[in-house]
View 1 (cartoon, rainbow, N blue to C red):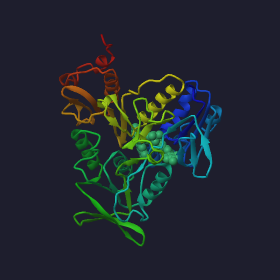
View 2 (cartoon, rainbow, N blue to C red):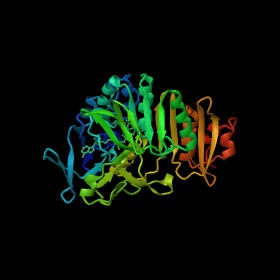
View 3 (tube, protein in one colour):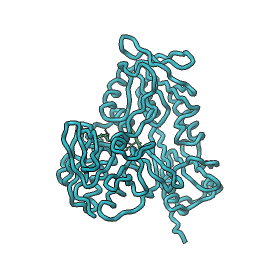
View 4 (cartoon, protein in one colour):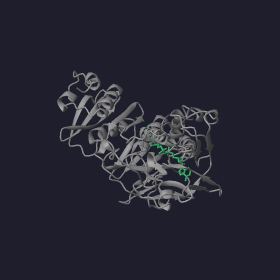
Length: 412
Ligand SMILES: Cc1cc2nc3c(=O)[nH]c(=O)nc-3n(C[C@H](O)[C@H](O)[C@H](O)COP(=O)(O)OP(=O)(O)OC[C@H]3O[C@@H](n4cnc5c(N)ncnc54)[C@H](O)[C@@H]3O)c2cc1C
């Protein structure tokens, strides 16, 4: 049945893409795109890269200019926070008291910063990097900072360190695990990035647990570690990951775990409610069907396209290949596939030349590829993995082996 009125909660990457894709695939009903941020939908990745660096302004972050929404009959509500879903009435409540009726509701509420359970988070100079407002504050504080501490050596913390280091600011990164980006890349890639950041002047402390942010007259003065050590800083970036925004779904009686639970069509147990992007946990073909929640633009945008197709009567199971990227100074990291559970890695290219790919295998099956400054490898990797094609570790390691030809070969 055609869905006449679609309400989308969250106007980030997934929400915006869904509104645009619905029109692209010919949806003719009403589209309401509801976002709690007070600005037009914008791209998040540059926040921790060129925008933080001051190389680009907000205009270049915009998904589309304002006229796009009117031209495509997308009713955009900014600064509007959804507070409840009344499933029986098929209605959403907003913080201002208004009610929006839907035929189909899509939850695209993303994720929010994870906060460590330590004292001192309220101090002036404790920053986060998730949205425009936080980035604007961080950008201003970075300009005046003399010494920054980053808690958490994930993508965001490392991207911040690259920008701050480029401005000549000393940066000290504290990480509980024993390596950088430990949840997403293999030890070889971690070690490469840690070395590159060290050469650029970043200091690391691994196995370090921050237990308190210390202050002086309400201002950040440093961070205390579990062992009693105290490090000085006038800016502390907390970047220890995110938690999915699942509360609306949970309050409405929908299943939530590490995200809003959806099936392989991205539908919740309620046939009138879907969930997409960072807030959704779904069975991924690329993780042998395991429930998976990803934080990536590709994931949010491809989820959106899949739901748009379903809402115009062309349902299909979601099976897009996951891929990610990060930019840290001169290093561009691109990851194709999900590498969890690999038992063998093979290097192609040269660590010394800062251009290489690590092929990750489990039981001889290629799971994913991490590439640094090798965009052609990444493009081939995506084709290979999406088609379910294999290359042997010996072929991957051999720089004369034609990866492109292997990626382009049609299955017999
Ligand atoms: C600084 C930064 C850098 C990143 N860099 C990369 C990168 O290089 N590559 C990459 O692949 N990914 C990157 N990501 C991740 C990527 O941006 C996210 O995976 C993507 O934005 C997820 O899209 P989404 O629509 O699920 O959520 P979001 O884009 O986060 O949008 C969710 C929106 O919903 C709003 N919202 C939440 N609750 C409500 C409510 N109750 N009512 C109304 N609105 C609500 C939120 O405020 C937000 O605007 C980065 C993220 C950040 C923060």
